[in-house]
Image (cartoon, rainbow, N blue to C red; front, side, top):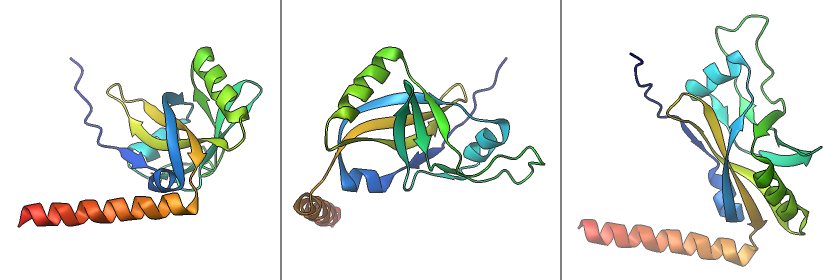
Length: 153
């Protein structure tokens, strides 16, 4: 019998939710090499300053950091290479149509390992926030913290 793999890997792009208003999300598979998936399973990845682009009808994630695997040999991967995302044609058309509009961008928000042991990326169509929207987000977060503290007492 197969054992259930316990996967607690949840790598988030916290800056994305602060800088952007997320409109629509998609879960995509990601094409990785052997040493990359091993590093991700160890939690050695980051989505800081990561973005997605569409080239020739394919969605690519750029600037995603996956640390080199410690036990890797000459086969080890480069840390910031471009990686292809796997989506259906319908999803790709929807993302491409939204990305053509001015002010919209495609950003990865979360990287995780699913129940089958595969790496998945949650990609969002996002619109940039203005400065005053960011201040409102900070105020809401502070108010929520104060309320939580008051209820704990």
